[in-house]
Image 1: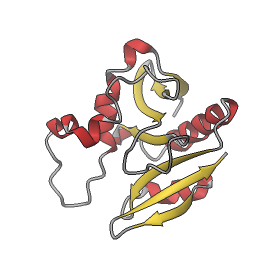
Image 2 (image 1 turned 90 degrees about the vertical axis):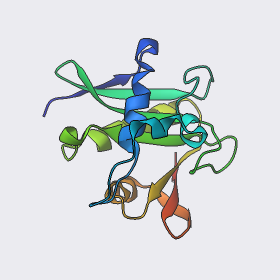
Image 3 (image 1 turned 30 degrees about the vertical axis):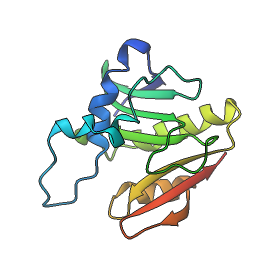
Image 4 (image 1 turned 45 degrees about the vertical axis):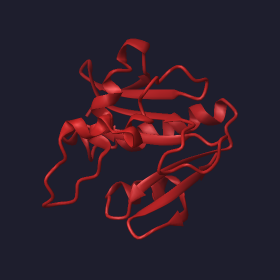
Length: 157
């Protein structure tokens, strides 16, 4: 599958709401939450006022002119928060575009971008049952904390 990865444009920031919803891990056999869940404060920190901070960076993946995935970071007190200098990462792809290497390519691209802007590490939170955990480990993320349900992972740039 041919795809392009590029920086997200300001007029595309509202799409992050869709990708935030897509990023919610839903285990097999579990009913997905309503889309309105993304308006909760603990999820809004990922997207609200995106682009207004110098630490907001994002990329999108396009297939045939359609945006099919996004990866973005910001310094926020989210589930993957490490400290106030380390951006937290969110990534998602529409289901029908998963498994083609697009997510891995987006991750590598955002890591390169962050390194070029002088960041020393990036963090994320992932549920232990999420298949993406394997991708993060393969790319080089390390588990630095865990609880019953999730890992906090860090990639050192």
